[in-house]
Amino acid sequence: MSAYIVFQRVKTIDQDSLDRYTANVSASFQDRDVQFLAAYGEQETLEGPATEGTVILQFPDMASAREWYKSDAYQNAAKYRFAGSEYNATLVKGRS
Image (cartoon, rainbow, N blue to C red; front, side, top):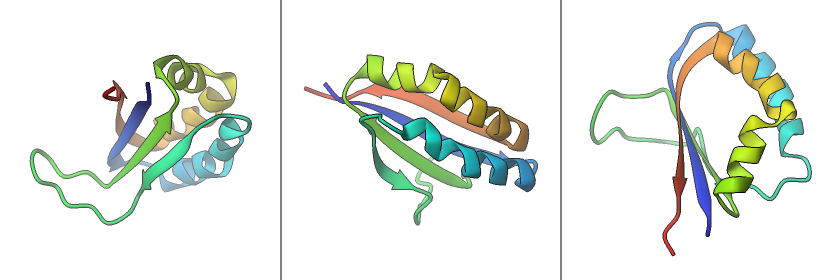
């Protein structure tokens, strides 16, 4: 059953760090079964505080999503995201 990771950027702190994240994160997707369903496109906040951007990734299952998120390749890139911004990240299981 599919699983999704939803990233929402709440606040940019350091654009240079975010640029380094962008330059490094693509390597973490190599040889992974992941689809980008949305990535910083037009968005409208319907409830709650507005965010700067949203990314939705689809994985085959919860285990695959966790494995990617915890991978050295992703965590090596994510350190720049952590330094450059505040994000919410949620892993959610799809419906059968």
